[in-house]
Image 1: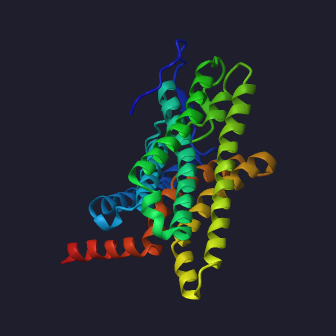
Image 2: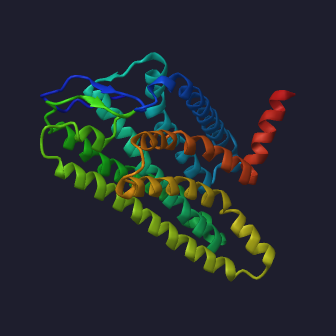
Image 3: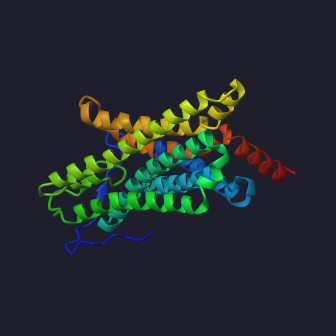
Length: 314
């Protein structure tokens, strides 16, 4: 992993406290985190393996799903190994370049996840509204353009955050009351004005995610209009069934994010310990549940998983 080292006045290491108030329980808290992380790794790797080797899964929907799985692996791996080292080994130190690198990949994967869900909503709209033209609209060239576009957009949104932090002097405490480095948490340790960090860190990523949510809502409104124009009840149920897993993942991804933003903005009575615990769960729960949801609700994947494990058992 490439480390960011953009500051000529590179501060010393930071100290990640863990979950404030629950230091005595770190060892026990680490056990479910480790189990959920292993579920995320195994589940997403199986998903990627099936999509890679099964020709019947070489479709646009499953290509976007494989991209979601890879991004979930980045999201969880950027945070959980360091969290476990804090909980079990007491390895609380993290270098400034290491902190920037972790922060970049955590924020980048979050914004990219949102963009992938938007692309998947567009994919479902095309599949339901124009099934006969599906493969002519979503050609390999078009899919590559979408992937490059959303990846580059996410990169351009998050990279300035790294430069906004490297310009700050850190002459006060370097103790971060968290389990991982996040933009505003690190910026608050600086002995300088961080107004730009606050405005950029809040407005740009949030507005980007909001625009994704709006486009997803528009896509599903058009999907519902297309579904209600279908001639039979069976056709309507089949069309809506193809969207079930995607809707579940969307709700699981955005609902905690909205709750977290509202809690930070208005939840002044919510304890800091709860905020930190919730933030930690957010980087392991969705990556672990996404492959399970798609495996349970997508017929093609469910069948391939059954064949994979029945063959191994035989």
